Amino acid sequence: MDRMIYLSMSGAKATMQRQDTLANNLANVSTTGFRAELQAFRAVPVEGSGASTRVYALETTPAYDSTPGPITATGRSLDVALKGNAWLAVQGLDGTEAYTRGGALDLSADGTLTTRSGLTVMGDGGPIQTPANSEISIGSDGTLSARGTNGRSTVVGRLKLVTPEAPMQRGEDGLFRAADGDLPADATARVQDGALEGSNVSAVETMVSMISAARQFEAQMKMLQTAEADEKVAGQLLSMS
Image: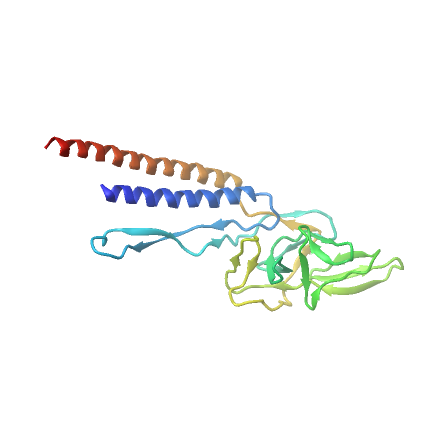
């Protein structure tokens, strides 16, 4: 009896965790540059006497879907879509360097280049400052040019673009970081100006997966109810003997 209860409980818990991941993905279906979170489980045997047939269903290291999202032209000079496996370096709220595919950029009041959410965008030499009252354009290699009122263009910096060789880790702030620290700038990385990369989450597939997960959870709960009913019947039979 305890085997049925244990298996049902373990399956229900794993299904709830999967549902949480799917819900988060669905909530970010319109987030620029969002990478769908993947979830996987591994079986870990339970140690101890009499438990050789038991296994835990434990979540493995969370990963993400690296499939590029759809590119949409915006015509905005501060919007960039990163090509290939290039990532944009930004400064996280904790002060560390992090990476994102969200290329919707903006300028702060003092001319600092930031993301739409207010994070400082990193250049090859640190944060990028732009002169006041200038028109900013971004080249395919990430070079920023400022055109003043006199019509002359001046290079003010270059976006720090990186190309990780191994999958990065997603932090609680939604930004990605490399396991070995800050990545070096990649001179061959390219961007598409006047465009943004959308989320790679499929709303239809995610909804279908959520329905499937809900049905799996219901099946696990029915097994728990069945185990409870069988235990009551067994207890009644034992009390009669």
